[in-house]
Length: 159
Image (cartoon, rainbow, N blue to C red; front, side, top):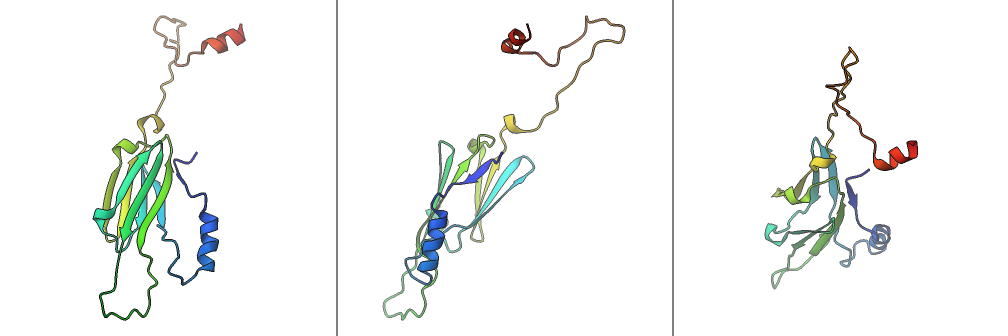
């Protein structure tokens, strides 16, 4: 089960449109990312070169993380633009944050044009050891602990 999913239903359509409009100033601004699990945290790196850190907005609502940022550049009067290939305007990206993560404890940092989100794995999703108890060798069940209990529906099915 994945803990973080890309949420971009129009990604293939966008790729086709970008190929059609290659070199056009109408090309959609995208936010490339890397995501991986590192121990008890999930790390996501977003490439945002040239973005003003003050324009970065991160919002989580109902397990959907939305990232918005803006990069702007306008030539000064008298400048002769020879090439304008870098996308400008608002960038956005959405991700589905799985229930196995704890977005309330998320940390965000921005360095060298890379936004890094660190999202801890929720306590309930972390691996944990389960102690197995056994009866005393003499057959004495006085100190025995039942490590596994059946639910009432399982007891009814067995009876």
